[in-house]
Image (cartoon, rainbow, N blue to C red; front, side, top):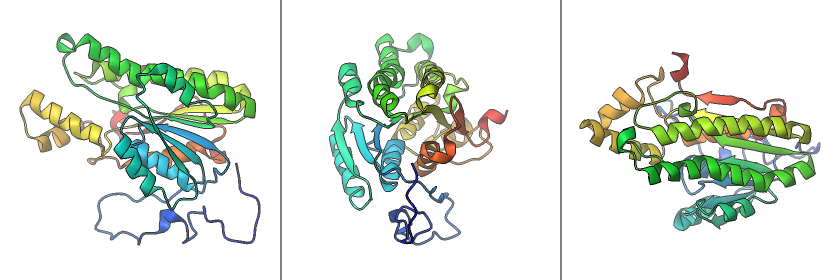
Length: 292
């Protein structure tokens, strides 16, 4: 959706100083973290649903879509986290509505997705164990959250998208949806499944103006990755710092964590009109991991 022509400055234009995304001063050159420039995007009149929105990638996506004017349903079971997100979004052009929900309630998840134009399947969890020690109930819980819940959310969202002749589905997958890693059987299996589900959605949705893609990052600076660092450190009996450089980033050409805002910008790109012919694929953000 593009804004109508006007001689007044568009408040959503990333080059406009009044854009909330540009409210901070430019970073010092010595700052090692990236500061991506916001893609020009106007999502006014669109409703987005972002799962796992209380923190990390989900919060960054919710804020980015709200900055583009979308009405965002921020879904998470973490009510205080959603309250904090709501405060952060107060000055943005779009609105953020908190939806406190555990995606293990699959029927409620499907109902929550009704009327959605943009669906960002982001909610995730992780457990690091050898296969022989992996609790079956935990394996099932990971697949429920990372694969079955996105399926049920799609069931709830697609009828509205099909009716309007427009929709964007962005699944936050992982480099582990493309490659395997030891001790992560449930997560790797679920993310590989999500990649397949996204492709099927793209094929079925194409005649209805719906695109479906995955964004597959490497390790992102989130609480989930911090937990993985602690789990791996305990498993291998080594310091957390050694886990980051020697294990998590061993296959990455770029030796840093990805920032949540970088992932959110990729999501925004896939929701824009310039990405209307991109569907059924994966935008890989792995710092060169899969180049091996």
